[in-house]
Length: 335
Image 1: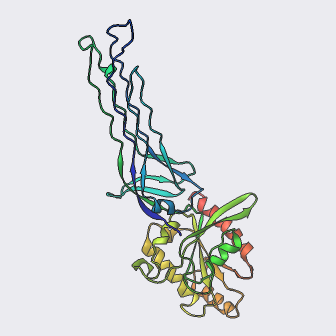
Image 2: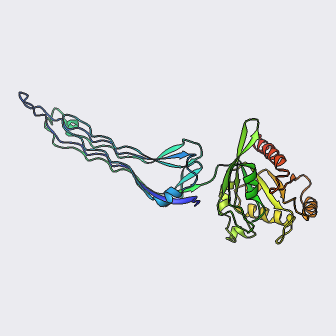
Image 3: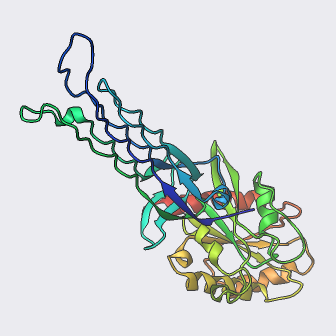
């Protein structure tokens, strides 16, 4: 189950109370105050990791509470501090305040972390209040309460390239052939119901992450089909590979299929339509593919890169991976 958005409640540990105590030992009269401070409460820390792929664990467990500090003791002993609670989230998780939507932190790199709720400070023991005018203090302070609150976790995959296209264009088959990812593949629409990332070797000890985005249909930005919510996973990509079925059994012609997806990218906004892009003309193993490819070339701009491939037979995939490597280089080059 792929979960990319959920709410959690976090509560940091409270600080321990300060202690009221007086030194009492044989032959030592008027030993004076010796109450220690309370320990600090533990904090709740969110840490990004590649060991997690979705927010499923946090969808199941909503509440996180760190350990509170212990009360201070006599002989000026400070109470034990509460242990911090480290909560691991997938790399690419955005942390927002649930009430305001304010972004607190974007955890994009392995090991990025934030203390989302800080533990309360321990209270002061009575030894802190001793003075020349108050030699027998009987006051102490309670520990502070730890921070708490509701937060929204939103996952945006950290991928270099996003595969976009209509349902059944062959995106899942492509990513299964060029990477170790194993998405569900079938001959009906919307087989892919969640984004699937895959690590693709580019040769010369280089690699990139390609994400298969669930198929869009016309009107996705209005909620048709699966909607366009999965396009959030394309926001971080450097470039796009637009997969077109050049031998469709039904639905729009190849050029119109291309225009449908472009309109959805433009409607979504956030610069998706402006990302560097190449076109993968898929299903070239079918008899009608030649005519579909020719029509696609006629109707698309002459400078648009079109790479004929067959995800089923593997024809053209090596050239497509090379084109993806060059596409990433262009996207990384300063403008």
